[in-house]
Length: 172
Image (cartoon, rainbow, N blue to C red; front, side, top):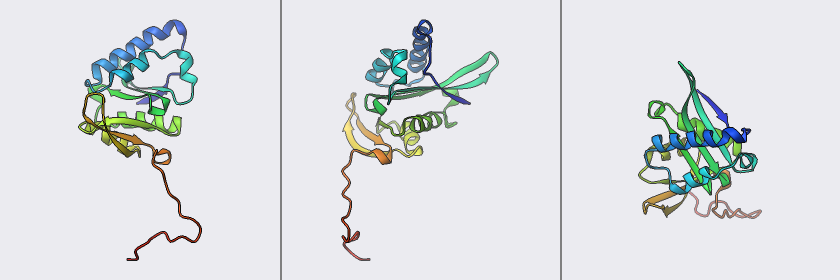
């Protein structure tokens, strides 16, 4: 499996390439990709691919007819605006989604995403790359949803001890 970034694309080829990726997501996203994330991807331009916090990755495998698409991952706003992963059913449970998300995290430096609590496969994928649950919210479909973030970029306020302050208040 090879993970590649889509960033330098010909404007003439862009519309058909984007349409193909959106069709792949519709076919293999298990109806778990939010409409908002799909809209953000559908409006994406080739110029935006070089902006900070935006990344479009594909996982491909070698097939009889050349490289074939196994998975897609798109992040916008470091995940605050959109974060999605879709993997072809044949390549699930082979860490394809985890590899895509790990590559996103490495590429962007920090990442966040929202995952419905009943989407155990996506939660496992996010936890496998080191994302941590930060907030429990209600998602766009009314389901309980976890906001997951890379540990060094949490929205939580951390109180650091002052010099000389005890780190542990109750001795064991």
